[in-house]
Amino acid sequence: MFKGFVVGILVGVLLLMGGVYYYFSSGMAPVATADPPMPYEKQMANKALNAHIGKQNIASSPVPADEPNLVAGAKIYKEQCSVCHGLPDLPPPAIADSMFPQATLMFKGKGVSDDPATENYWKATNGIRLSGMPSFKGILTDTQLWQVAQFVSSTDKLPDSAKKVLVPEPPPTAMSPVSAPAKASSSKPK
Image (cartoon, rainbow, N blue to C red; front, side, top):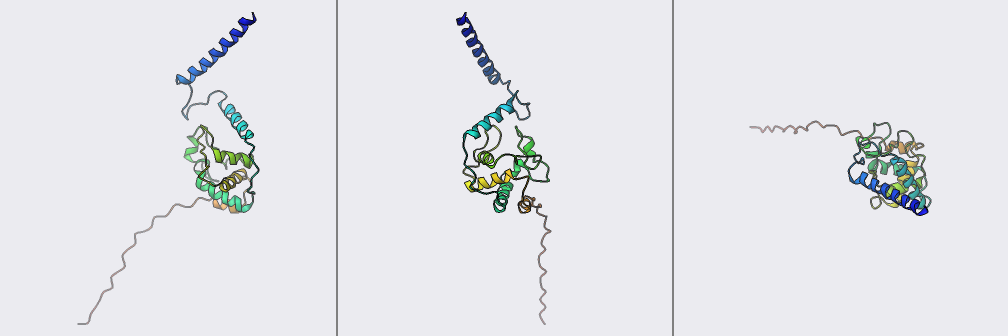
C-alpha cells in the first residue's frame, strides 16, 4: 500500500512537470507585452527578486544622501533613466506603457522612494532579468551607481537644486535664415 502511494505521488509530480513543460513549449504561455500576466507571475517574480537581493548582503552606501550627491544623481537619472522612468510633472514616457512589466514611474505615486538605497543600487548595477531593466555596471562608475540609488530612494524629498536638474530643456527654436550682409557700394570718383 505504501509503495502504491509513493508511485502515485511520483506519477503525479511527473504529470505536473510534463503539463508545465507542455504549457510553455506549445506556445500557450503569454509572452507578448500586451498579454495578461500568468497566474501569480508578479508575486513569484517579486519574491524571487527580493530573496536574491536579500542574499547579496550589500554594504551600506559609501555615498551619503546629501545635496551634492542628490544633484549628481539627478543628472545621471535624467540622462540614463528618465526615458523609461519619467520626469516630474510630465506624462509617462511612451516606452513605459509598452513594457511588461511596466517601468516604475519614479514621480507618480511612491515610485521606489520607500526602497532602501542598497536595493536600488543592486537593481541599477545588475538590472532585472525579463523586465527591460538593464545593468549599468560598466556604464556608470560605482560612485555614480550609488548617487542614482540615493536619488531614486529620495524622490519624495529632493532639494530644490536636484529638482531643477530634472526640468526638461525646451526644444531648440527654429532660427530664421541668416541674410547675407549687404554689399557696400563702392563709388569711385570719376
